[in-house]
Image (cartoon, rainbow, N blue to C red; front, side, top):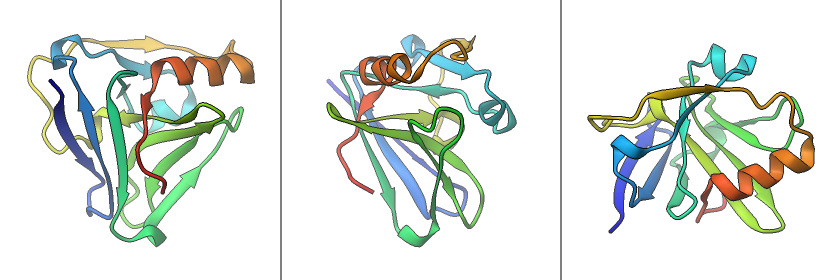
Length: 141
């Protein structure tokens, strides 16, 4: 059975619906150690068996930012500046992660956050990991 969790930026212009059958205490919560994620204090989670829909009530306020290996779009609000998650599109489909801090209501009893570094990955390894670990995205922003 899938549980649904809503998330959004501060002003509500962009957001997401995250569906997972994983209980929050078993979520894999990762704290990437790159400079972007550290600056945004952006622990993230995903479920390869779940689903994710990103939304934009005003598409003009959606800012896509790419950095590093430039394999994914990091989604930020142009109005309030909040980072809500990331999206990658490959030959296998669209996949994404959510920022834990963008959840409208954070579940109780969350798993511990695991610091992790992906610095040693090349483009092929990064794309392959994301295809395997990130959540399938059902919308096209």
